[in-house]
Length: 329
Image (tube, rainbow, N blue to C red):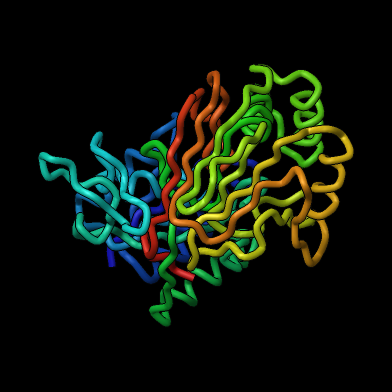
């Protein structure tokens, strides 16, 4: 088996010693190349080349941003400038016949391995992978030895694949503020402070959003989260639940609020942190297991994917793509 280990040396908890231990352990089972990333988008470029070169496995050692780049690289040739997949289908073709969203149609896609090295590691934790890099390495080696893997569905939004969550509005504002603090450790406290500042001083205001889900009447909102699994994130060791019925085997989950008064926010934060959450409320727009969601904004709003700010958008279509990728677990 040929494999590439992609290491983000800037990730919160990656170390040179941990990288060497992981590389040595993997090299005992696979023919391994190691690449350390040194610029944004490097992991994506490496993974894209790996897919084109017929590599069997790409292991991402870093945080959720590194994992997202690797996933987007592995599936880069599944998305073109053509139309995204239609609701209820994992792909469609443009009039020119180009592929635009079905990994099954692009031939070989390497399997993904994940050894967490970031601060949140939402995707890895949702798959049951230990947050401890040494324990996660042991899990990965054991899965390779026993040829154990899992097919997972992914989300696709505006040409960007996401593993656990994407959103427009308040959460994307928070991500944008945290991104400006690169170099500081991204702790739960940093996110909380960014959330409070973004609540009271939204950088782009609060333009209304119009949400469209197949078979439902359009709904208005001020912020929207689209999840590919649950929990959506973690506050330290506390899981944050928005759509408990959402998983890697189902469609997308939508959680949106059409009011952001303090009583509404506190209510849903409390529900999200409950052990057995079942979000309800008159200000809540929620759907589980949907094939697609379209969100239109009256003015440009911030748009984030897997905790990274992508930019500003006035319209985004989110699609569920079943069985998009094989993960070694």
